[in-house]
Image (tube, rainbow, N blue to C red; front, side, top):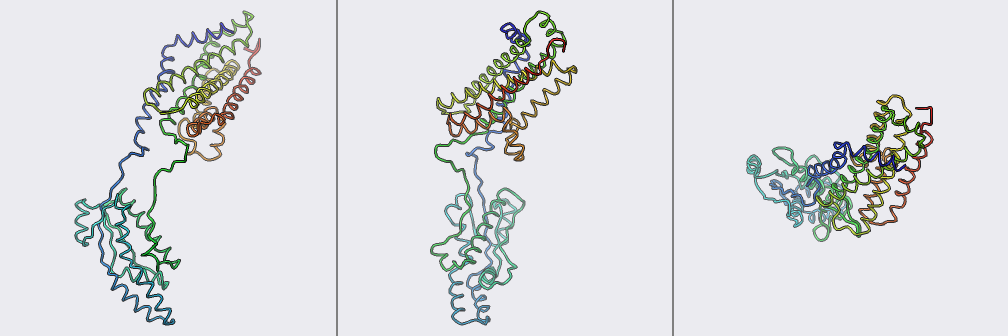
Length: 420
């Protein structure tokens, strides 16, 4: 068996182009992807700042007077009219809106200046303002009538801009949030306390970190996904070399020499394990040195990563053994090579090596989590966040089970004498 193992390593070593691809291709792909996506998801990206104009055509006093006339015309008890007016005088719709934009949290990314309608249009055209908000005449009366008397509202705050932009979408969200808060508080009858204790809620955003849990990054995802995919292609490469040996009748000569065919199969398995393990160790080592994708990780993390690489390489070796048996059993060698490539690409797609599993339907996600690269990727992403070795017990067992299953199938389908 040692002679077959040595033979496969020497055959691979003689193909220098294959060696260069196996060693440098995953490293180059990871560096390119990391460079292409760098900054896209960075928390240090420059935040937007909005210059906003406020055109205030409405008047709180006039609006209250109009609303008071509507209340007086209602056929309700005088005490009820008095209660409605007391509550209405505490609202101050325009004051709420202007005060909302002067909120210190909002002022960090929104600068508001009160201007006339003509000035606002001119400043927007000159791109000194991103947009302006217009509060039309009668707005106070309309809001109070709709909220407290149940009248239909046909007037609202409008936003005017030169063109659609990220800034405009952001300010639209802010206005909608403000109006939803005002409407909810009016509906609950809490507006009597609004000026004193209840303020419109600003939309919140940001990244929330759970204690003792590290988030994983896209460079880490690329490193895991590309390294596992390229390791799977080692199994396909070894199987293709088996097809070449079959075409050159190498296996026939092995049978005629009375060498156990099992040794030939195990030589393929062991050589694949060594090549995949070396490739992954070099990839992780070089990427860590160049990009530092796993900063400040403990010894526990590196032990767990070493175990996952070793068991995944063993799973790839089992797949190579299965491919070898299929290659020797199928007469159409071109079909065999196509099948191996298709299987590896399918594992890559289902296992999340091309794109995150979260982007796939749930059923496909469940299937992908049982592929060797899917098991490895899911386990390592979780391990990056928690660094608990006990979390790797099940994934390591699944990879070992995949190796044993592939080896058993390979042994049962491996051709005997007279079947080549």
